[in-house]
Length: 221
Image 1: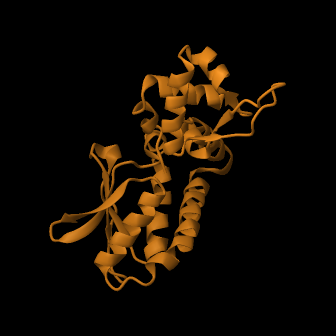
Image 2: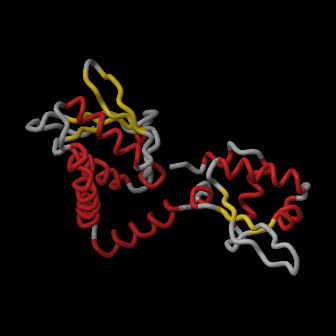
Image 3: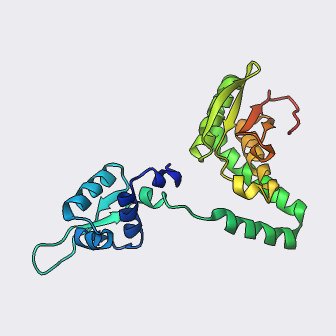
């Protein structure tokens, strides 16, 4: 999955083309893109070819024009995902409403339950692991799939999961209880206690997690 930061890695003209297509759900022709961006037909076609090669744009249904139908181009889901969405603001409002109407303990329990449910869904992929290092590696793969940019690192002779793109980071700054979701997910996915050994909220460059032996008891930082 691409992240919104990938949009900034594209050239300014390609960003403008994608934004124009974002605002044109039915698609846009080369002529319409030329007028919107202010560049030539050949330049638009070259940029569209590059964006299509990246899977961001696709050719849509041609538009009748009284003569030869005009080619139409549309934004693909991968292209739409490049544009940021302010999920944290909405989620924060939902949490504040729940805190006010249900109470802190109920919200904490809800977050843990949600994380555990998704973790159980992922546990089948980790169940075949033969040892703690493989459990840690498979857990890192699961977190990476969810957008955490996770990897396995060696810390004092054992493996830990390092995640430097916590999907809840901005939300956790004001609602640290959301971290309960992460820990519940990882514990349910691995069937083992999981200890957070460092946290971005405490100034660390990334969050790290240690997957303990199945019978061990650990304490979160």
